[in-house]
Length: 335
Length: 255
Figure 1: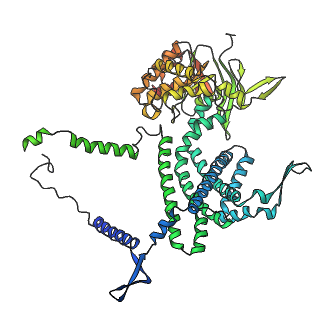
Figure 2 (figure 1 turned 180 degrees about the horizontal axis):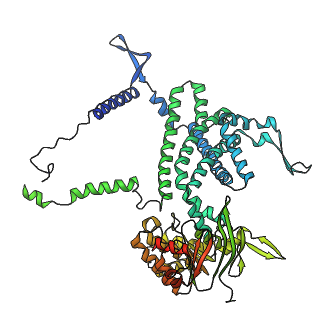
Figure 3 (figure 1 turned 120 degrees about the horizontal axis):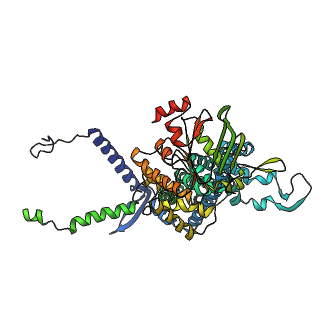
């Protein structure tokens, strides 16, 4: 009956010629990349020695990408210290950005027009100006306000006087600038998440007698997280790299540390490679974290949650192992 | 106190953006009775139901639950709007079941039943769980407590939703077309739970298209059309021998 299940009929699979051409091109490009990464170039110097009274000179070669220098600087204390500052900047700025962004998103969705308009204006301003300008602005805020006074607005009552320069040290200025800027973007991400939660969920929570705040905390935000997390992961990774801008207001984070080193030894390329490696390592770790966070907040949304990569690997290993373990007397007997 | 009806409405009006949805609804629900609201879509049945627990705010008329005004307090000859906290407290005494179930998707069945008890009533987790398990047993889903709503059938989800509302020990239960989103073969299991609930003496207001349920279980049936009560009375009489032309034509379409 069947035409392709018959053992005597040969089945000719479709040939994907274009795919094969694509694969070939990709392989060649990959080979070129590996070749150039591992290639060596002449240094222009010679190593000379005497062989039975005759002076012989051999040209010296070194890695094109100066891997030896990269290796030398990859784990120096200056780079490590810079890495630590980068992580601190990223974490604190993101905490500020996420919490403020969430607040602004909730304000934006408030039925109160003053609150929603304020939230809109905030986003308009901080998203509409370059983060570099904001960074320079906060670092130089003392020009506008040399003294910070805490008191009652518009009344001659003051409690505390502070020097702005002592507060807005470069690190603090960077956190304020990056955090406030991030809040504008995060508020839009959070708003998208809150809007994605079905109105019926809010009604059900209200009908149980939950207040607006309880509904938000227990019902809306946990479900909004599913939508909020992927773009937030993107923002964290973006912030990790944007934080390198802080080096221009003399915060010695990763890029700043590298620049300090290469300004004295002129090894620009190797140090750029060093910090790129570190940025890649942190990004990789963050991506893995994001995967598991997404999985956690997806609970209930999918009927059967997909296996984690580790679980998938385990089942694969088990599958392969079982093939070796189970004896197959039928086939061996047939032989 | 037993003489005070559970729900009493007189002249309740509501309009959205100039469109009058309710145009003076008068209705009384006595304690322990099952009241069914029937009528064509857009007649204002659901809106009226949602006014009872203040999910919608009525514009005019008097609406009382258990003798108290909904959303207001009368003092010194004035009506004071209730603050959010008081409204929430009143809502927590009224259970509501929705057409689309509206179970909390991120919580397990058990958590759906405990969250209100814990967050609103301040109940301890252990007691909330015990109560939840008892109710799940009552709706025949005691083996599903660890499931998420998306893993259940529509009928099972609606039974969980009923149990979730019951977990708050309400004095009144509102049902907003509880079987309309269900596959025909799943309607029965939900109606059985509701019949059982009616027999236990719960006061229920049910917006429904299930005429069989209305005939069998309801003490009173109200037929809404165009935002007013067209006809009301004992279901056997009203549904078998309707007096108004509108109800006659409505019944000829749904039966």
